[in-house]
Image 1 (cartoon, helix red, strand yellow):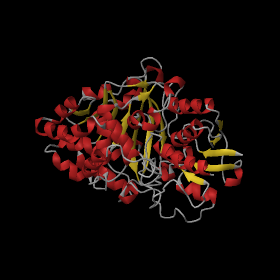
Image 2 (cartoon, rainbow, N blue to C red):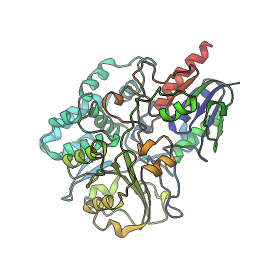
Image 3 (tube, rainbow, N blue to C red):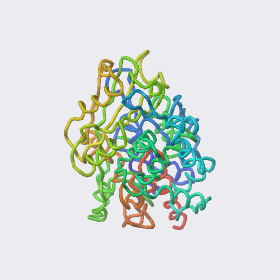
Image 4 (cartoon, rainbow, N blue to C red):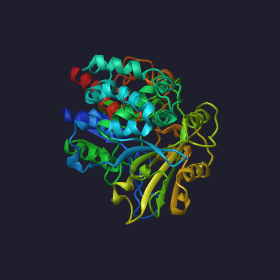
Length: 469
């Protein structure tokens, strides 16, 4: 009998399997797709030689993750590449605000009226980032805070809505960039704890950057899988699990799946019936004949570029997708251009680029024209650079990755109390009605993103139980 079986080879399932194998437990991992990776994969979606990331491409949380930083992933080929600027937010007039590694450069891009306010916002946390990120990404019952004072101070700033935090700024440039940071988790700007979302992304840029993985996000997943195999773990792909009886006998079962899928597989009935899924996204991967012709020079050197004219436009786009049930006329876009720093991603002189906008849950329309109209506002002539495009709305995203229910790439709404208490109101979020079954997907704390911490935290709960039996 195995000690543990893990279902789902996304970053969290891989991390959970590695953590258990590191502690001497026998582990087997089962993945329905032909390759490991989940939301961290790389494929030729458009033309030969153009290597795209179907989901995550830039990795501010991965490079800061306590789970990943404790693993020798570089030995297995993972190499982080840092663009000149982590993130840029251009404006229609051809200027831009930047999220640079330097706090001073970032503050200066906001203008003199907000430079001081920004410095005062981030400076108290910069030199405590490694401890802070470990504290807020770990479940209190699995690890006591190492710096409770700083964590409490962060909570005072981060728990209110981002619209409150935006009042610190007098001009629109800072408000717009910060609104875009919050929108990465598809939460309305007025939502609970949205200030923390924006602040986390800003601090990550200043401390560890927003890198891409050389060769694509698949490199991170392959490194985790390679480490798992060297630890004695076994990886099975093309193995779809429809019920618990499909799996070999084990002392514990750990699921990197949506709560809905886990309830179906394990026969939990309505246990997760109140769990809410959020808006979906419509994503386009592009093969380009050259770099994106951004009007703002700063955007040409950035790994990530946010597109939204101002905070009001961003807020309207989020409300349309999450509350009004319609696709926004002017979608807020998150775009990533990995080939500005990684020439291995495309043939010589060519580029890969992706963009996505928010749409209602399960939306079946086509946002291509609206996305490209937005891109043309900030990069005139963009369409002339397009060699090929691969589009994916909510149905296609859910078909590629079963965890993206209704196109929700966060595997659950990041709003209200569910932003922190997921998948249920519980002191033990990784446990389930079955004492041997656990959940470790991004539907559990600390939530969405490629950082492996749900898998890391769930593995702690598992190995503590296994040592007691």
